[in-house]
Amino acid sequence: MKITFTEAALSDYVWLQENNKKLLKRVNLLIKDIIRNPFDGIGKPEPLKANLSGYWSRRISSEHRLVYER
Image 1 (tube, rainbow, N blue to C red):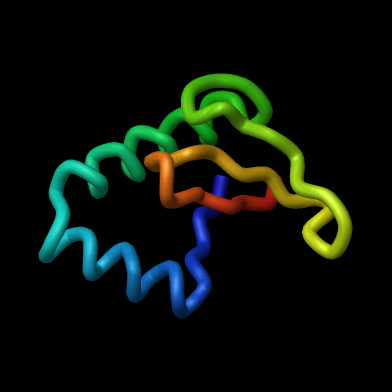
Image 2 (tube, rainbow, N blue to C red):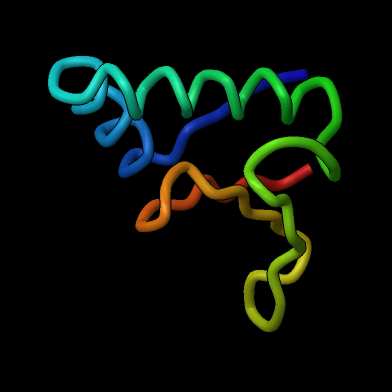
């Protein structure tokens, strides 16, 4: 599976590496889980609707989401 980041997502990921190790660990855990099973698992995966149809999201925290396309 190929993992690609948007520019904004890559910028956020780099920021997490420097500033928030706890959230970074959670993001890495979610990415590993998405690779194993994109539609089930941790972070309450749910399909997005309307203009984001075809994308899924998982909860990183109560405030942040990881959005991905499978």
